[in-house]
Amino acid sequence: MEKIWRFRHEQFVERLGWEAIRRSDGLEIDQFDHDRALHLALFHEDDVVGYSRLLPTTEPHLLSDIYPQIMNGGTWPRSPDIFEWTRCVVAKGEILINEVPASHILMTGVLEFCLVAGISSLIVETHPKLVDLLISTGWQVTKLGLPSLLEDGLVMPIQAKPSMAGLMRHHQLYSIHGTTLLLEPELHNPLKPETTLSHLPYLAHARVRSNHKNNENAYLAK
Image (cartoon, rainbow, N blue to C red; front, top):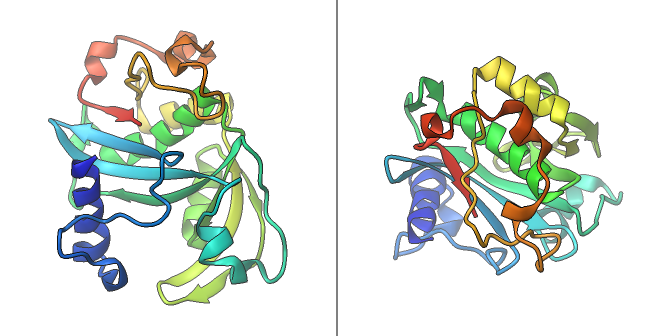
């Protein structure tokens, strides 16, 4: 996890200039990094090169506690199987893993993890350009409000639903062969803590998984 905290500080503070979250120890951690937060980190040659965080909407999250004004008084989906997608970033530069850009693997991995864990949808506060990207790559997107102008630019709240068709679309567009996930044997399902993800029925494995050794340097882990 220290690698993840340092990667987040390097990307969001040093690179993107989010001075409000700068820390003297070089670790980027906030009030939402609790035990129920899910950390999806893309590793390559033992280095973190991409990252996303998923937060349960049944507890405080960014839309509920930081940006509720962008809903203009409206409500947003909240459910044990709906998470908020935050802190999505890939290291600067043309990082290729098995000839595939790291950004493509990260985006595919988030979608794939949702299918594995039974997460029905994600809420996202993002730039309208990313909304168009999600739609074009197979996510089922519902706009929850109009774009709002914040300090960091335009932000639109949306709900994005993953699907097997969407995962197939990612594999086709990005020439990804096989699963992006390397699940620990005892990685617990965030929706059903009494079960482990490795024991869940996962149809995508049978349909898209090839030789996992070809992807040993590309994986997402909690």
